[in-house]
Image 1 (cartoon, rainbow, N blue to C red):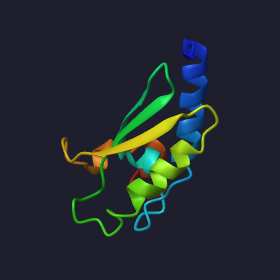
Image 2: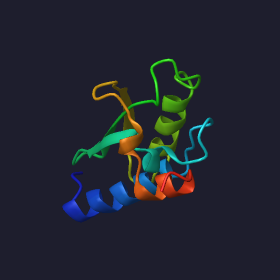
Image 3: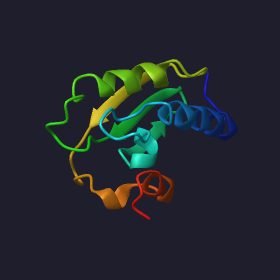
Image 4: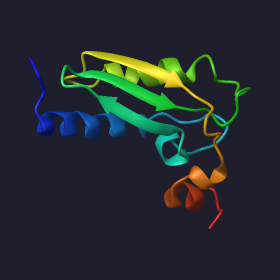
Length: 108
């Protein structure tokens, strides 16, 4: 069964809600607002690919954070499969954070 554009949009919204429930343990802001999520791709078959990064390649949660993200995405209604792709291009910088994240961290 192929998803409609509306269904893909609805799943995308739910995925973003889930991503906003995942926090970097070193920074009290969720990974979405931190700008660690570069892209969320949803196929018509409900396969999801999340392209994300970490605050640094040596991040202490490099092993566990992608697994947590994959589990959260896989748990969204309508998602058939979830895959996380870690990338360090471009390198994450503080400028990638949302205004909300910067405010939360007292950077505004």
